[in-house]
Image (cartoon, rainbow, N blue to C red; front, side):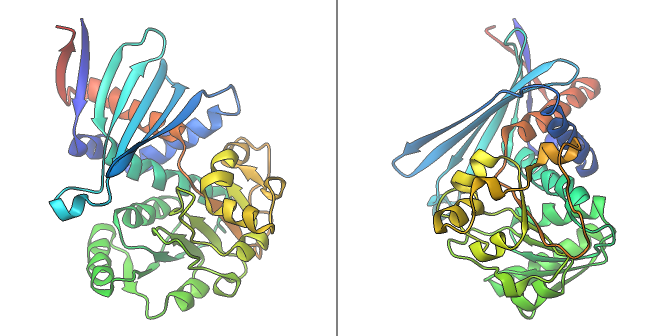
Length: 327
């Protein structure tokens, strides 16, 4: 008999504060420098959508393996369902015991934002204090919360193609964080005025070019996670110092792949993967006037890092529903 803990979204949120998730994700990237971290990705199409599966192993108190299955069905909102729904299954990597099953939406939102914060520690100027955010969805709020942990943020300017959504988002974010949050009068102008620029959209054409970013900016390109999505002009990438979470993924589904397709960049032009920066093998920001870009596509080691910490805290606190599989 194996006791498995089942955890909902609220459980995950309450067991995994953002600051703790950032530390767990950074430790996971650091572990990549110590040993091979196994991972795998699989896509499965369905008539009205598809399933995206990511898996990875990571050693903490024990060897953990997490498998995340996200279902993406674009037509769901018309039927009152979320576009993306999913689960993370966490296993003991030594004997295969299923330790936990948990909501993947909170895990994904937290770990994605945490990866940006880890990158910002190395790639944003220490005095960076202003954020320009494009894309007022759930991930946008998490990105700001994470960046506020690693930098002393004073103000945030937000933009969305839906003005009403941007206004509601700004009000909610200000209440959640206590930061000064305003709707941008002009997206390009707000990006040019910011120390940190974050793009979290589903755009399929560039929303940020060379003229929209000033010297010294740290840019987190978060939205592109499939070959069709495209937020950053290839010319801007070519003129910047580009860092990635995974070179293979970024060259296939990130903004980087558009720059490679245009012939303005090659894989060799990428400065480093994030694990190489956090372990000190390669340099992050080297001057105050360079533009640094983090092309974030989301890697499975982030999921297992977050899920493992949630599980350990659920065990310690008695949180979640216990079920015996095979009973």
